[in-house]
Length: 317
Image 1: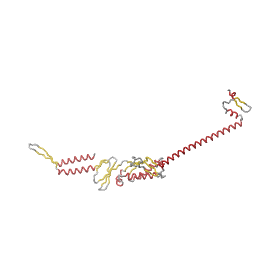
Image 2: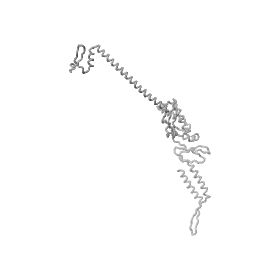
Image 3: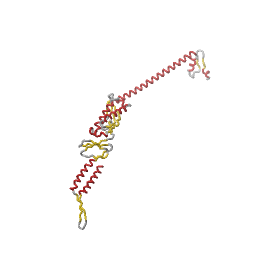
Image 4: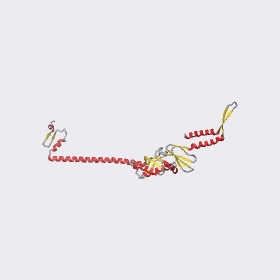
């Protein structure tokens, strides 16, 4: 849009200059006193204006660079071999002797994921596989948010270039994550140690990439994948733990039942001891216990070989 407006302005200036310096107006008078004018273009005078105008039409639009918000242009002068930075907005950069390339200064996302279509390499399984402290392999889905240091854009362009994610960011992520994960056990990823692992990755990655001019905002572990063999081992372990817990419950139940029987036996023994003491003091107490245990349907009993007791009469029935 800016270039189109400039084109119209320059074209208007060219036409105005041709009209002013290359067009000759002649005033003539006809017979009868009628006056008329004629205009003639002097191509000898118009040609330099046209040539200069065409050069301006070519050079000026090529010299205008509009830098979007959150971006910058690295400008390299092939004559002086110096670098400069063009910031957001409209910038005038003379072509032919200057080379430019645009960099995004906003936060960028670099994702490595198992699921196709999610990671930066969308058409492949891009999970990061890393060995743990036990030597077991685990696959990690992660996302790294990073930015280019605005003060070091020219240095990054000179040393690394615009493909810095594949040249620097990705290799650094892989190296740091593998070193950190190798210091932890496989089950730490599922425990409270997961936050510690993320923190360690963040700190080491920030240190690693800061020297190259990159700022790391955050790294998060999104998902963890185990090998099929390890998943089966975990499943078998869980089954064994459930069986052990069930057996522990059964043993605990049996133990409590045994304790209950011991307490019950002790209670019966104490009761017998009490009865024996009473019998030693009062032998007739055995007859009372005997009658107390009889069925309600028994009306007459023989208390001993010589005495018959009428329970019906005694009870008034």
